Amino acid sequence: MALRGLLESVFFVIANTIMIYNKEPLQLNSPVAFWLNFPNEERVFWVDRQSDRIVVGAKRLATVKDDEDRHNYAYVFYGDTFFDTSKNPKWSGMGHEMIAFTHYYIVENGESFYLHAGESVSIEDIEVPHIRHDFHETSDDKSDWDNLMHAILDGISRGEMTKVVASREVQFTSDTPFNVASILANLAENNPNCFIFGYEKDGRTFVGASPEILVRHRGSEILSYALAGTAPKDGPNAWTKEQLLSDKKNLFEHNIVRDRIVNTMKQITPDVTVGETGIMELAHLYHLRTIITAKDSTKSLVEWSKLLHPTPALGGEPREKAMALLETYEAHERGMYAAPFGFMKDMGDGIVVVAIRSALIMDNILYAYAGCGVVADSDADEEYIETNNKMRTILDAL
Image (cartoon, rainbow, N blue to C red):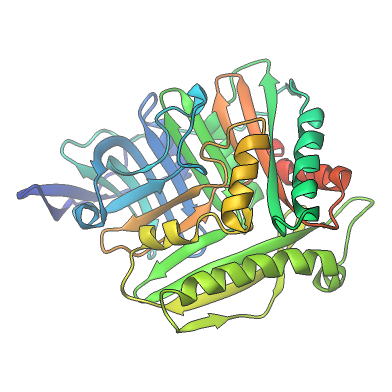
């Protein structure tokens, strides 16, 4: 049954004409229900734990040209790819753009509403399915992983780089098509400390639960996370928080990321504050985290995103050499994995995360992605186990 109330109008000037977004109160049991109202449409899903905001968009209204054009729309999705280009067809046409949608479900500031440009559609509070898929791994990447680790550790030993972030793509096949709505709902339920995201285009859906903010823009305040250094929270090899906070290898890896973010920010503004390094606790993992803030009114959220991406938490240090090695030796295409992904409001405030703990879904095939930072003291088998632990974010949602 459709839920409706009084209608408001929100005006945006587009190409010298007045675009009217109509705003109607709408309460749904789950934001995934709104997603389900738009099958076969391009759509996006976003749960922002920091700002206590949910945005679900459907049906592309416009490709937003630039930051000036962005002001013409209520909410704008920004998605990129890790590298400048994507050659694999499964990533074709995904990323490298800002998008405004025709229909939005918004939950923020204690209210929830339906925002639409032009004609509304009847929104049903559809029950979200909870499905457990019968799936199995249908790829074997251990040989590729060992070759990649050998190349990285060889480069580090020769002094060409201090850190490189290796990643894996693991294919899983289900007996039935993967139910994206169920997976999104499970990701949101299982990961209360993460940003939940989904983007569907042309039968492909990219989903994930990221703990890592690349950049947050609020007025003149810029915030970023240095999130690097990982330990298992449960299982026979579980660490304590104190162990991680004092581990030399993990602290070395973390400080490379922290220092790069700080140095990048200081190129733009002298007003940079570095917080204390602490622990971020997730369902199965501990991470070292340092929060870094700056004051700046000269650059937009997207401009800051492009300055910071990729941090050494996703690429490596030095950036150019690490990226060149990854392009040569990683056997898979990263696509939108570990790339900037986020939302901004019309005045430019918003959050961009890095799209880690993620997967690309195509019917009954799912490609799960995970990575880890490699430094001189890293062991290939231990890092492989770490990526398995990180992949549990996706697998637990299936």
